[in-house]
Length: 341
Image 1 (spheres, helix red, strand yellow):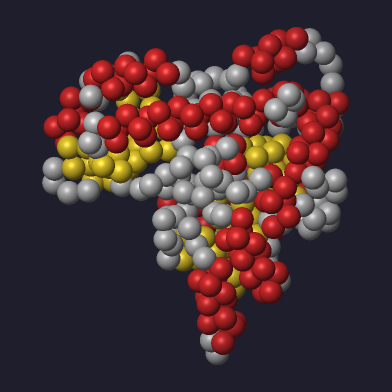
Image 2: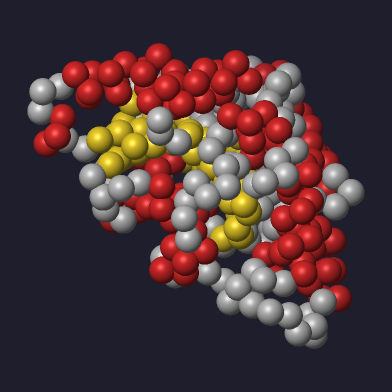
């Protein structure tokens, strides 16, 4: 069976497992107050060129989104996000369950524009009844988007400028950040993100780690007592060094970027193979997620030997399927897929 369902089906990069075994019997302080977490923080600060960044390690993406958003917003505020965004669609109402409304905005190719954000906030401010309404207090984007698309450096700068204009923070979900940074023709770097976002996180769960996301708060004291808020949300891992060791490894010897580049190389091979066989793409994605239009009969046949993600029903005879590569995808996996096609 070949698996292209998602980018977190494998366990972890062997170097991470090796370091976890090597350090297994060490006794270290808990809750991220250990040497390995500090070392990982230093490496991430250098990679972002953000010496004053505050960095915290959490376990998973939904947990991270819910914790950061709750920490950034007042009780009467909501978060602006694309109507296709992860927090809008695929987090089971986690943000709303935490007491904050997701204010969904129209998107193009999974992205929201600075103009749309600016217009929404201006209309809200001019509404005579705005005191009775949910106030926009934060902008959420993801890189890559749910559609595997990317914001350009210029688009990030424009969004950042609008957020500064309205004095609200910009938060970037980086669950698949490595795959976005290493995508072909991307002009965004970690430093670009750190310069334009108030908070973002570097995804590990989908990029080589067993689990874990590294939250980067680029402006000191932006969130007071964030450590305590993490604890309050049940998101503070007692054995915090398990997260620190993983990110320390990922940010040693360029590993995070190398394995992300491998996933992109495999996605390009996948993309090229589908194109040569005459398949159509629902989205044009430069990242590790590829969205393919399949005839239902062919899809049913393929499902006997290959697993992949359902995206949407296109019509009575066609379905959009998502094929995802990862840091661990092998060329032989893709070769076998095309033998079946």
